Length: 254
Image (tube, rainbow, N blue to C red; front, side, top):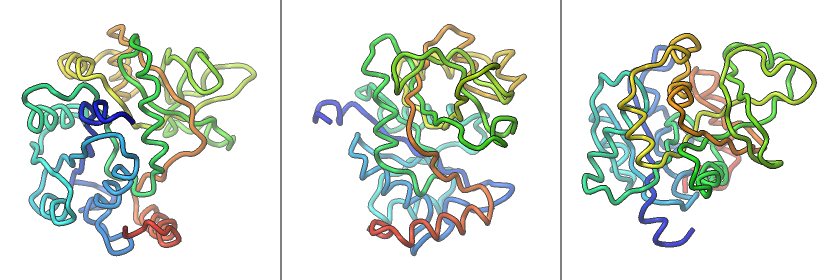
């Protein structure tokens, strides 16, 4: 990525300490490092821009900065991840130099750097407001699982679609592939500012999917198709799986 683009791109990694199923999740040890630091390392390897971890607890702040990464303290009462990301953006870039914000969830310690880079590609089209990722569903059970969010999109190429809808239902109907949404987003700054100023929308509340607010407001979301789903750590079993995956990686504690 060109150096001027690097200077205008910010990777924000939200880290919430409150977790019902895995308390203190950002600080969970994975191969000798806190999980949030493992995520920051993957983001660093992507080489797409400045990295800032948006924390809500002093212990997380200390762990992140001790590992050599930048952290910013955010409020604990945000209604959504996007609101936390926006607060972090305003705190670490009050002058508005940043033009693109990538939101990498803080519970993806095994995410491939290329997956992070892929989220930026749809923004090469100036008509796109928000970019995100998806992968084709290969397991039949996922097609009817409401916890697997599906993207309904209009194909633009073999690797990209324009999002028409996101749903927990099995959609679209008929023959053809279904796509599992990956909740990693790249925003134009102006799009993020507009998004957080909007009230929750009807379909957003019905599906419990925040991205529908943007579509209902007429914002354009394009979706890059990638080859694999990064492991999200939500439970103790997920944590053990992440430890196994990173223990075999040469970059586990780099």
